[in-house]
Image (cartoon, rainbow, N blue to C red; front, top):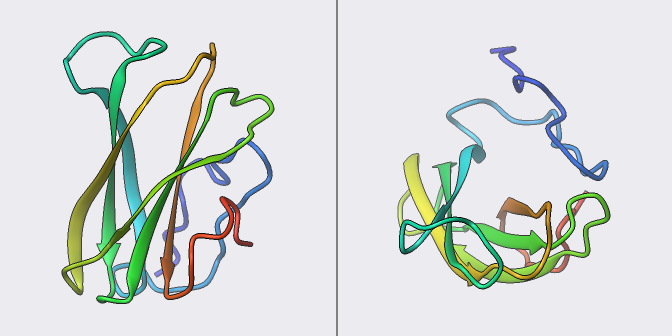
Length: 123
């Protein structure tokens, strides 16, 4: 319906979202949140949870979680793929990992239909 992404392109390394799809029909990421599992600060060695609120089209959708220790020059590390268990509704999916050393870190969620988690910016 022409709503577009607020503050587009919301990227740190020229990995832009596509302009295809229809909102609340095709897959989309609504929000991403990073929290400390124990409620403490987000510091090196902390156990963190990354949650993504997504609009799921179907069971063939997958959320790939990636993280980088340096958001200025990201070298993406794969965390996990979460396979969807619902269709045509919002869902919140998550993964956990230990924060590496780094002053300005980044996370990325790639939400895709089919295929495999081969790269953090599938194009």
